[in-house]
Amino acid sequence: MIINGEAMVTPAVLEAMAGTKDERLREVTAALVRHLHAFIREVRPSEEEWEFGVDFLGRIGQANSPTHNEGVLFSDAVGVSTLVCLLNNGADGATETAAALLGPFWRDNSPAVEDGGSIVRGPTPGPKLFANCQVLSGGKPVAGARVDVWHSSPEGVYENQDPDMADMNLRGRFTTDAEGRFRFTSVKPAGYPVPTDGPTGDLLRAQGRHPFRPAHLHFLAYKPGLKTLITQVFVDDDEHLESDVVFGVTQALVGGYVRGEGPAPDGSEGEWWSLDYTFHMEPGDSRLPVPPIQ
Ligand code: BEZ
Ligand code: FE
Image: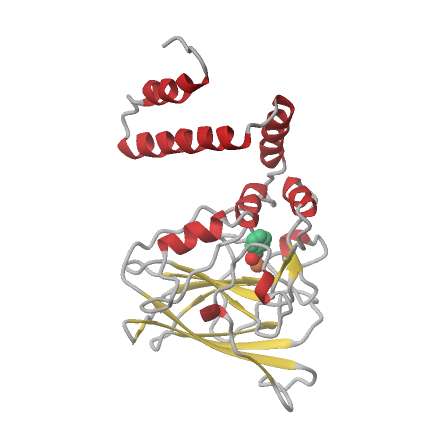
């Protein structure tokens, strides 16, 4: 088709793509073109602005590395990750625990830890945390599920962001017992700023937004036959609960972190906290996500 004016561009592109054999790919790419062209008609970018936008997308790709995923970060910061997550998972907790975004920091190879073990693998100052968790499905215990736990330090950094932290610090893989329970010892996570040294940080600054996530623990529960549960349990007194930079907080995921009194369960002195949390899984697809980093 010879293009005779801007109105012909969208139908020409849709026609050119109409022979896409894969039905879902045809649907998705046609919708992408329709919405992208509508966006351009609404915004009417100057050529300079369009060059800036294309360069911005390029910089997102260039900022990716084996230990950093800027693409996931950008998707998170504009709310798309949470939207995809809530469209695909029950958000009200009726039959399954509400899901929350995976984030850019999950690693698929965290070491197995025995029930009740510690995931602190090197010096990590901060209050201790004792977590008692249970996984149920339809009210019954889920035995033998794999549960990955990962979280930031009391200083608000993940081990992959800090060369001084032990490899795999504050990460562990548990297997639920016959009652669906798993327990672990760690340190209480702190809230943290998402990385702001890339294009996503430029965007947040331009929008006058703070970069903080409220403190949380990440969980990924996996068992064949059950829908993989990816979620986070937030610390209830965090100042950024209502303004999470990546829109990940839903009410059901605010945990009851209780400050302990007297000696800790392991006999140690000093500030300590406990968390009891029950996860609910439902039958379904037990897919594991692609790890955002190695
Ligand atoms: C996280 O919770 O680990 C996370 C989520 C989105 C952006 C950055 C970090
Ligand atoms: Fe996190």
